[in-house]
Length: 88
Image (cartoon, helix red, strand yellow):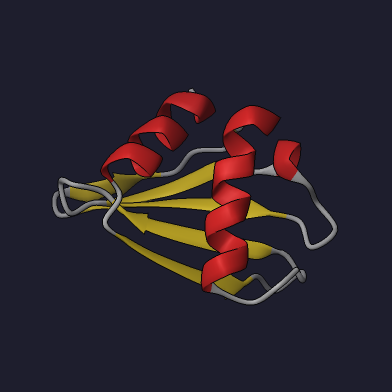
């Protein structure tokens, strides 16, 4: 499920935001084509295989996920996070 959420975010995403988490990690928010926002998190010392798909914010509500993302898809998230926000 994490790879499916990541695929949608990377292929339909139009805006990106990166913020640090309280524990020193990264939180990446990607605005989807539908206008919903999918969040991903990674520990500060984490690599491509350490991303997790977390919250989905939508106009009609939201969902909370804790779905792992494979290293293959995590590389794409890492490229965006490192180019758009705080390094970690």
